Image (cartoon, rainbow, N blue to C red; front, side, top):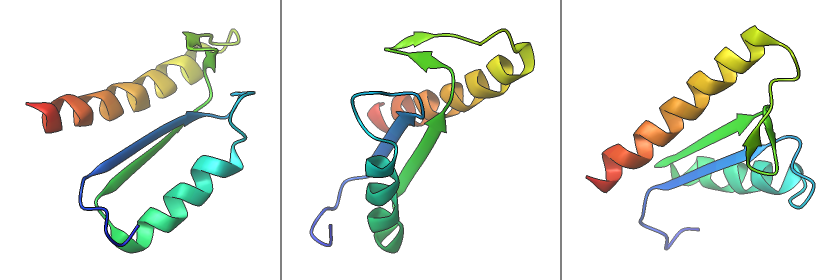
Length: 78
């Protein structure tokens, strides 16, 4: 990680069955010492499809996190 100079943006959903939630957390911990990263954890996706679980406020809060994360990506890319 010490040689990595790019800004890193990690997004992970707690319900992801393919990537255990501990993996992105370890990556975020390793990047924290270096700085220049963003880690966003969500709880509303099921295989890349948004699901609210019937909780409107959870969906709104998680959508706001998703928006902030994606805005950061677009801001860096432009």
